[in-house]
Image 1 (cartoon, rainbow, N blue to C red):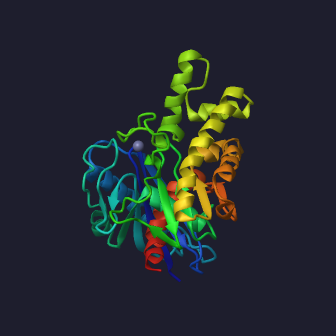
Image 2: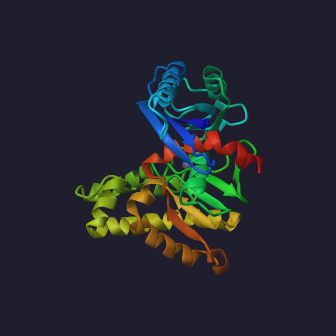
Image 3: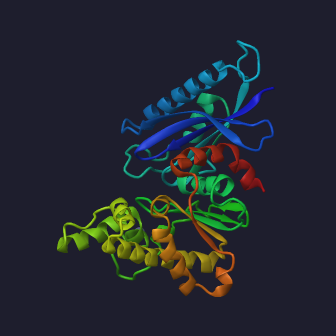
Length: 330
Ligand SMILES: [Zn+2]
């Protein structure tokens, strides 16, 4: 019997990866057969895509040569590649399969990655931006399972969101939906990387937290300088770091309250920083939400850390390859 194989390509501004997955015989789950990772270089899209394609071919060759479980010696695995999914770190046009840009990476403007990889590997290729792809992955395989209206917030260097509404990925009119990090939560507040002031990202993202810490460190240089350090010290009980996380939770709550009031979400899944901080951030966040939201919105609302951890990028890419066409059709 032949297995269905899928390739996932995670393409970000600093790193990229290609992973090969096989569907089990019930078509219910996928199992990772191999992965290759590289730093993204500034040589331009052609050279990076070539590296990805060659990596994909190596993974496919290795999978084909692997002995088949339960079969006699020398019996190789039979599998056929169904599709490729690309999770792109930046704005994309998913319909045309074009990456519009990748922040801080020159040369990645209007790159037709979908048709390039599809031609090179001989199967259909699908593209989605990484926040949307991660939302679909957490929804189907992680902390969003079983929900119908959910937001995934990235919460790393920046804040981006992927929205699952009424059981479908919501992309918006220009595929720009989910820029939740740039809602203004403090009018005239701290400058944001986007050029505006007072955005949620300027307060509650990794880079925003680092900038807020800079101000405190001017008075006391012994204080932590990164979100990671704050979490470590809060775990040890440092009063400043605990208070700083409570303050961050307040900002985050303001952003989440807006999303819940507008979208009537039942689940909010939070990435990187929330995963690292756990209840040190989520405790005060839930408490703040319960003060700010109407009881009718709080009923059944769950705010949880992402579940796919360091594998999220690989899962996001495979969700684009395997699940997105189905999810968009339903
Ligand atoms: Zn902004």
